[in-house]
Amino acid sequence: MWCKHSFKIAQRLPKTILRDCHVTSCRSSQEMKRSVINVSPNTTEKSPRILITGGLGQLGTECAKLLRKNYGSENVILSDIIKPTEESLANGPFIFADILDFKGLQKIVVNYRIDWLIHFSALLSAVGEQNVPLAVRVNIEGMHNVIELAKQYKLRIFIPSTIGAFGPDSPRNPTPNVTVQRPRTIYGVSKVHAELLGEYYHHRFGLDFRCLRFPGVISSDPPGGGTTDYAVAVFHEGLVTRKYECYLEPHTRLPMMYIEDCLSALFQFLNTPNELLLRRVYNVTAMSFTPEELFSELKKHVPDLKISYKPDGRQYIAENWPQVFDDSEARRDWGWQHKYNLEKLVESMVRDVKKNFLTKRSLKEVNSYV
Ligand SMILES: NC(=O)c1ccc[n+]([C@@H]2O[C@H](COP(=O)([O-])OP(=O)(O)OC[C@H]3O[C@@H](n4cnc5c(N)ncnc54)[C@H](O)[C@@H]3O)[C@@H](O)[C@H]2O)c1
Image (cartoon, rainbow, N blue to C red; front, side):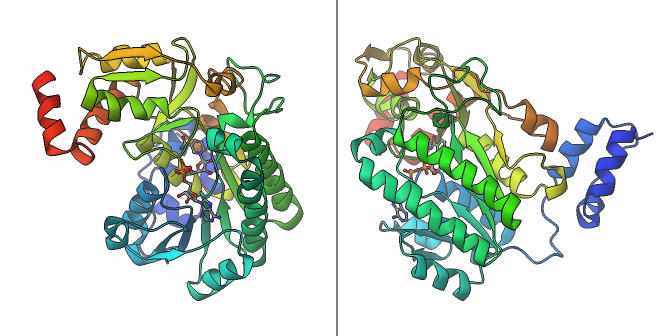
């Protein structure tokens, strides 16, 4: 028999989603939520048309791949202000979109009949500190544009937030979903602003605003200038030159997740029925590690990897961020579960970087050592 809580969740779910679920009668409510939300979107329903802003950054291209697989290439419009590679053009529609140009955005939403907006454009933590006025424009004014657009055209809007939305006054181990947020970077300030404005538009205007606070995201694509970038750079540099100079101290613990987990959280969250969301902003994470722990795992694949440490301004940023992220609310409300731990992450990154980035020459060098 279903427990009472599972039955209530089931009653609140759209019939189309329930139809795709093969729920056995003795499942707990938690398992029930997971199975409900892990289903692929129903193919008989019209696919949403999705615009991704800042789509040529670390998260955008991979995100477009996942969404195109589920909703069809033509339904996912990638956009940015930088020039796309041939590969990004080959996979589906790409257009120029500057988030500071409100009229231009309106045109896109109307012409492409957009339903969902995934807003990735931003200046990340380290880059933002180097150009605060530009970070204010892109991260705050740009966000005002997209949120107003979403309200006007009744779009579902996803804006990622970050562990950088917390500061030295927040509890750092663990950092709960709701706590003090007094960040000390313009990046963090702009993200808290986005969280609050999004929640306000949701309560005031009924906007379908959704936000996940991601930890450092690790993928083989080059990162965009964040404080957790070392955990990507060490794979690129370490696999070729077998040495890496780290800008954080060896014991600096930060929450992290592999790109596949990040995107599956995003996909699952976007598809969660509104009724199950007790919040509009959720922490999500997979693991926490220090540079030292990551490097010692990587040394299993590259035994002669030489690491040196030369902390810079990013050390100060990292010291004020969460060490361990509490994402129990996402796990409870919509069944979030990660797949990758440190060991699997390192294995996958070594494989991805070798496959996608190393030239034949360097790959030969790497193989002679691994
Ligand atoms: N990568 C991470 O580890 C991480 C962690 C937490 C949250 N996030 C968030 O996820 C989102 C995407 O992150 P990312 O790592 O892909 O960032 P990124 O820096 O790699 O990409 C950001 C993109 O925004 C674009 N952009 C800049 N100004 C723009 C403008 N005026 N109009 C349109 N586009 C513009 C850039 O060209 C770039 O391609 C960001 O909002 C970031 O805060 C990322």
